[in-house]
Each structure stands twice: as C-alpha cells, then as structure tokens.
Length: 233
Image 1 (tube, helix red, strand yellow):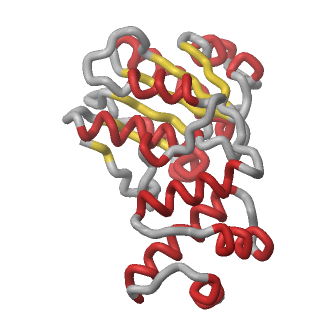
Image 2 (cartoon, rainbow, N blue to C red; image 1 turned 90 degrees about the vertical axis):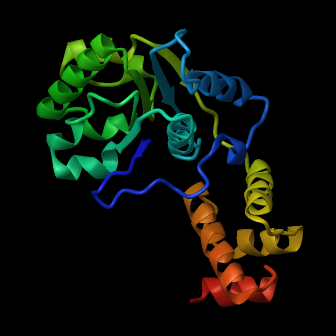
C-alpha cells in the first residue's frame, strides 16, 4: 500500500523504473534501487541519493515507493520542500510503514526543530527495521546540519550520486516517455519544442503530460500544429 498524502501532494504519473531514462552513468544506481525495492532484501536499510535539480531523484524515490506498494508493502513519500510548510506532524504516524522516502532533505536543514524531528525519525526507523531512502542536492557528507548527530545519521547507509542528463539525452528521454504513454514524438516536434519552450526537465515533463492528456481527449496525433494549439491554451 502506498500512503497517498492528503496535503495536496501527489506522486507524478508514470514515475516508475521503466520510465526512467537509463544510461551508462546511472544504470548501476537503478539496479541497486531495484534490489532495495525487493520485499525481503536485507542487504541495505538506508540509501541516500544526491545530485542536481535535473537528475531524477524524485522520480526514483517515487519509483521505489510504487515498486514496494505493488508487492503489498507500505511506502510513504515525503517531499520536504512541500511538506515543511505543514510542520513536524508530517513525520508522525509512520511506524507501520515498510519504507520512508524523504525527498529534498536540504530544504529543512538549519531548522533545529526539523533536524531533531528527522533525527528521531531515523533512530526509530532503524530500531523498527524500516527502510529509509533520502535525496539531497549534495553529498550527505557535505550537508550543513546544525545537529551533528543528524549529520552522522545521514551517512549511516550507502550514498550514490546521480548525473544530470546531457542536452542530447533529454530528447531521447522524451521519446521514451511518450512511447510508454502510447504516442510518438518525432524529431521535428521535439526540435520545435526545444526552440520555443523551457528545456529544464520538469518543464519538459509537464509539457509531455499536457500533450498526452489533450491528445487522448481530442483523439489527435501530436504534430507541430497540435503542439502550438495545446501549449498556447
């Protein structure tokens, strides 16, 4: 069972291992996370993923949650950049969760109350045998924590860096995601999008979501005129 948060937080549609763009630099990390998603694996209890804003950290945290949920286990996804607005109560009620995935940990560092809350959560999870999966923008050894004991806890497990996709890989990623959704993006359409719209990963995925929904609604192929029409709405 996947704990869907009730605080206007939703998992991105399609955030699965199968839809994550794999290359020679990230394939080993993906393999490790797939193993981490196995119901009865005992090799690791804690993993920390780190990298820039466009490396797909959130996608992979959600993919692990989906994988466990589909195998009948309980997973909770906590994107702190959003949930920090709601206070420390978001860290409660997790005692029956098999895996706790904490995204954007950098966003609360420097706040003593939050650091203590995370410190206590990690300690309890370790005692209970719950799996912990973190993401941050930097190597956890370089994160600035006001609470030294929290800094120690964040490096208890394995740490893996995710590389950013190159400019040449992003079109290939879009083609993959579109194909998995059941439609084609040809080179002319991608070239048109790249010349006229933002190229950051989140913007590209948001555009893909919009094109997908509208193509299904209108029963239309994704062509350059269709892109012009949909993205001007």
